[in-house]
Every structure is written in C-alpha cells, then in structure tokens.
Image (cartoon, rainbow, N blue to C red; front, side):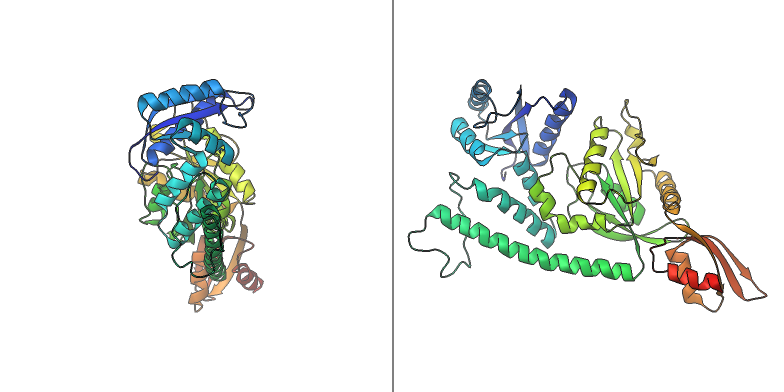
Length: 418
C-alpha cells in the first residue's frame, strides 16, 4: 500500500470457535491497522460461517455484496481479516477486479514503513518475500534484477520462473546477512553477560505505551507515538534502580493478535532479546476494553519464545484513562501507573526492585575499605539494603541481595567466608 488515503473495504468471517466480542474487536483492530498504513475505511462487511469458503473465503452472496460495494464506493483495496490462501487471493482479485490483501500483508506493509535499522529492514523484506513466493502466479510481479548477471535465467525461462528465481536468491542473500547480524548480536549479548549486566525487557501488546515508559525509565529518546508498531528496532539503555543497582533496559517490538508466523521467524534474533532477559516488565494498556485478550496474546507469544518462565511484573499503564470495566488479572504481580507521571515512574522502579528481590538471595559480606573496586561492584550489581563502616577493622559490612546466577555471586561467597 504505497498510496496515501486509499479507499478500503474490510471483510471478516466469524467462525463458531470465535466469540462475538473478540471478533468485533479484531475487526476494530483491523480498522486501526488500516489507518496506520494510510487507508480510509469506507465499509466493513462481516459474515458468520461454519468454515471459510475454500475458493473465495466468503460465500457467494457476501462476495456479490462486496463486489457491489466496490463498484458503488469506487474503492482501491479490499482487506480480509484472516490470512488468505494464494488461490483465494487470486480468485477474489479476479472476481472483485480490485486489489485484495489480507491481515498478514497489511501488517507486513506497516512493518516495512516502520523499520529504520538495516536489520529491521532486512527482517521485513525477508518476511515479505517468503509471503509473496507462493502467491506469484497471476500477479505479474515486476522485480528489479540488478546484479543478476550471466546465468540467472535459462533458455526459454518464463517471467514467472525468473521472478521466483530472483525471490529465492534474494531470500538466500538476506538470510546470510541476518545470520551475520544475529552472530554480532549474540556476541554483544555475551559481552553484556561477561560485564555482569542484569537485563530487563519491556514486552507488551502494540501501542500499550512501552516506548513512552522506556523513555521515562531510562531517560532515553525512543520514538513514541500513539500508533500501532511505533517501535520495531530494539533499543537498550542503562537504568538506575533506587538502591543504586544499575541494569539494562530493552524496548522491544509490540505483539499483536495473529502476528504473521513469517514475521515471528524473521524477527527471531530481535525477539531473542526477550528470551535472554533476566526480568520482564509486561506493559498492559488498562484503557483498552480488550486488555485481557492483549495479555493472553503476549503470554502465548512468550510461550512460543520459551520466555514464559522468566520472572515478570505486570504494569497496567494509562491509569488516568482506565476503562470502566477494567479489573487487574491475578496471573502475576502488578502495579498500576501512568507512564506520563514522574511519581508513578519512581514507584515503578521501587516495585521492580521489590519484585526482583524475590528472585535473589540475601548476603552479608565484609570488604576492606581499600578495595574500592569491589565496593563499587556490590553497589551497582547487587541490591544493597545496608552498609556500615567499622572503623576498628577498616571494613565495610554490606547487607543486600544478589542474583544467584550473576557472576558477582562468586565474589559474595569469597567475602562471606572471610
């Protein structure tokens, strides 16, 4: 969707396993996604069916209704709420005589606009090409073949076969480049581990306010806007907790219902930042009527990433705009805040520390006053709850808490034995 303000019709099918309320919300979300991509929704068509029509997704009567609306409203595009098979997309485009895309393609389009880093752009292009490959037939896709060179096409090779060859070659190139980026990211993560840095990752549904909160907690300048998928590229900054402990805070891409599997796969190295974290902050928009479904979506995606076992604090954001029916779920410990209120952000830092303490072990050590480096390490890499100086022995007695998996734990054992 390259043009701005394209005229759009949305189409959705509610199946028996989907309740009416989640379905209505899903269509509203599709409308928001369309607006984010620059589309103007003129009509919404829905249908209840036992199963999608194999050839056209919707039944003949509903197809005739959509076709009539396409002609009357002179729309440019029809967007379907579920992923269409290649044959369904071709049949619909032929019957409606207008461009037809599905929810997956719409999300891919938004991602392509939002990606700023080289890695983000490569990840989106990979997902788009893998989506496009089985859908080439009948599309007459024109692709640049710069740098193809001699031997890229055999005698009598058709344009469609050439397009497929180009896409496969490009997919191979991108995967090689992303493998190099992933290797660099792994080295960077390993270095952070060697440097004894605890990492906290912000996770949550798209537009929950993660970037706003990230900026408040870390005094950073991450892009923040009231829009879906404002952040695609993960950012990491240092954050000081009330005790003086320093941690790393990472802002991540927002989750969404029906996130295309190709995107999850393409963004795997980026999402590894979540899996490698020591602690998760789950940001939830308490002003959104569908906040419970958002929570469920995030939990499901964390499970797919094998990150569901990490210690977590739920942060219900936008308490100043809270929905009338909002009730915090009891799945995990939580705090209610507004990311725009400085006092709330201070309270959140305290809550983060209190929640982290439950994963830590208490210690008490004696450190000579001459060992300034060790003193500094304990203050910034553990939570110090008490520090007394004994003039007689010229030693500091430090009481605090430490993560048992943290490398400094060995130092704790060393000084505890003295």
